[in-house]
Structure formats: C-alpha cells, structure tokens
Length: 255
Image: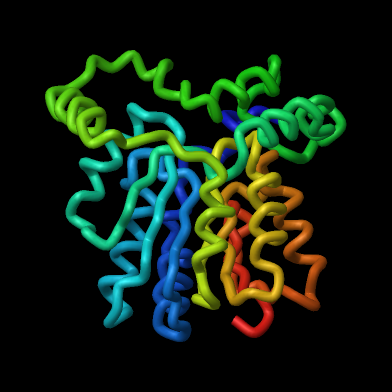
C-alpha cells in the first residue's frame, strides 16, 4: 500500500466536496431518516457539522443523531464544537467490541501484508497493526502536543463529575433499539477497523432500512467495503459517489 499522506487528495475532506453536500441535501429531502449514527466524530467540525446543517436545511424533524469518538481528549473538544446542535449526542467510546476489533487488526491480511495491495492507501507502512490498535485505544491525541485548554479542563472535570463512562459495542446497542427506524450510518473511524465496522453494520442491519456513507474508499479503511457495496446489487443501490474524493452514499433495499 501507499502512504495516505502521499495521496493528492488526502487533505480534502468529503465535507468540502460540493457533490457530497448536494447528495446529502437530496438524501434528507427525499427520505425520512429517523436515526443517524456516525463512527468517528473527530473534532465534530467536518462531516458531523455538515450532516447537522443538512438536517436544519432540509427537514422539519430532528433525527436521533449519535456520533462516536474513542479518544477522550478529542471527544471533549467535539462536545464543545457541537454544543450548538442540541439534537446531536456525542458518545465517548468504540463502535464495536474492543477485543474483537483488536483481533481483526492483528489478523487482517490487508494490514499484515499491505505490500500486496499496491493501489490502496494506508496511514502507516511501519508496524500498522500496532499503530491502529493505539488509535482504537484512544491514543490519537497523544501526538497533538497541545496544552489542555480551560474548556477542556472544565469539560474533563464535568464529565468526571457526571460519570461519563467509556462505552463499547455501541453499534450493537443502538441496533437493538431502532424498532424499524430508517437509519443513516456514516462510517469514518480509524483505518484499521473501517471494514470491520462495515461488516458489523451489514450484519446488524440485515433486512432493516438503512443508508450507508463511507469515507476513504481508496484507503485501507473502506476499499473492501466499497467493493462489497458495489457487488451486492441485490441489496444496495449506490446513490452517488466520488472516486476522486473517496466517498460513496448507498441505500439498502426497501429503505
């Protein structure tokens, strides 16, 4: 695999893509989406905010909007950034089971033998399994070298006071309470578990109405997810995509 930092569009977020924005507007106009689950909040200023603005612009109801971030420091910052959207619920945790996610990373052929996939991008070419496990352990922000801000300190103290606890397996927990609600999944977590998340959603949402948005379809994260969506024409219809900017929006049958 090639290092993602060498990709010409690596710094271009799908949230800046005008076609992606148009696709979201159409999605919320044409379909009644009752629940949104985003895996990979990061700071909340990219796809999370874009989805929120599309909701405000195109719908008369606010869906249940859950966004998941595994890194506590980044989660705290996202809480601040998303405060203006009261219908968004940030969760500190992991979308899938942590032990299963680590096993996936440690045994995934595309990670262990990434050199056999020359047309796919990856974040790390040196010990990628180790580094992806660090990410799902919530250690991405350790490389930021940022001093804790006053807000971050207050948020940390407040969340400690209110006993905000780390959750895992959040996708499964949510799926058990959907009760037939049409759900939009935006999958954009750490590269090492992107495909694992996709497989988890496909399993949990079989025969249930849903849409899927994938980011980084030319990357380790979702090159196989995109392949599976494209090949499964009995169950999925691709609404729109950008190969150049690396995203796809797909609709499950009967959604």
